[in-house]
Length: 149
Image (cartoon, rainbow, N blue to C red; front, side):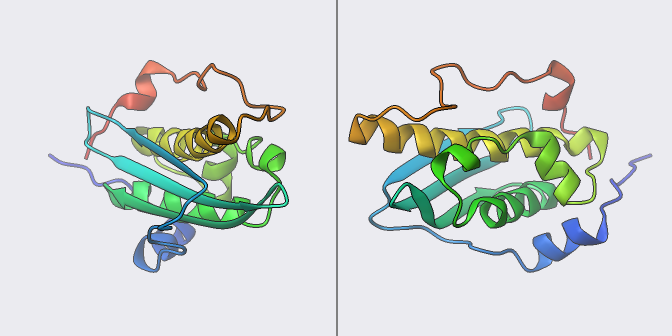
């Protein structure tokens, strides 16, 4: 028997009407990440002005949770400083979405990591150090990679 995950109303809203979808042609930073187990792929594009995220867009290929996470992450960081954006964690994203099923929590990891990679790309291109940005990617727990339907 296949058991479908139960999503919160907020997850469903962001899945059915995602915010900030698209690409920024002249993006200041681009971050891409994927999960080979389930096939979710996220690419985040950022535009930075005066150390703030002036625009955030994304393209996501994946399940409803992956799309909702991308939408929520973009909402959470729009207008924030780069340092503030780097404080976004997978748990914060899941909380803002009013929870994610355990087998979909890995999507919140992907969203936070794709954003971090876009900021890192911006920092490298501009040869700047950003507090909170390290060469080390956020650790992931193995069970968060599981993609069950």
